[in-house]
Image 1: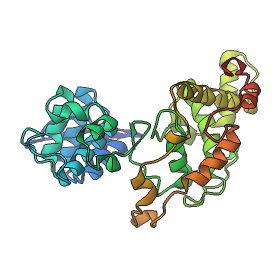
Image 2: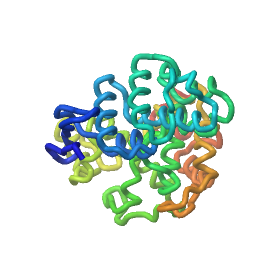
Image 3: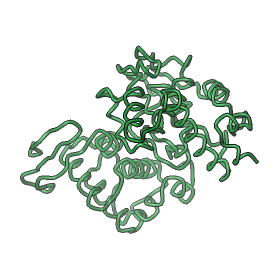
Length: 331
């Protein structure tokens, strides 16, 4: 193995490949999402290829999650005969074909051949490719799934479905709290059972409010693992601004932010019909660590809307907008 880890810090690493066709000078190493989406999701198991793919995406300014999702979608379309070598300028887009992965990254960046369509996103690509490709276009509201499967942690299912920007693992960021972590000053003293749906609606709502505040404060969400949770963040906010926010004020502001985003989406036609997951995630058990679990999304969604004070279509009610001092948005 010529791929060498040169430096490693918390959440940061650099790598070098000393020789061969994937030779790289010292550069940023691939992180979890990159390895998951450009590696496992495409059945590419060569770390040198993944390092090279990561470097290409960095240089081209491509998101590694969406790029990996688009290319794995293309590989499945190729497997099913919906995409051929004529569409890809001769590339065999077979599962695990690392060289084809690298070439398709270049095509996406340069808008060449099928790469141009893939660069437009899964929704447009699946519509143009046709067939049953919409069945394996794995997205919510047009945003690709990251490397966190909702079948393994049910709060992730509800978080993806209700996220204002689509399948984003950072809008609720609950996955680690179904996998060993706890957050006592948000009311979660112990890790929750990842397959249990009871309590998950409130769980997701609470975390969405906290994450809305972290976004607004321009804070990395990993700071919560260093102790910067609700109460310390409230204290820091008060010290910086001279305000006198309570913990409740802090979280209510996060709630207002989340509802404002939802109101924007409602204006654009978003409703319950869009708060869903792809059929593959809702109906196809995957086994392994997920234990053949399928998320009971609608049960959680009904409870979620009730907690939020939204109607059955997922639209904030007048009472909710009044409570959040958002009366000007009442229609």
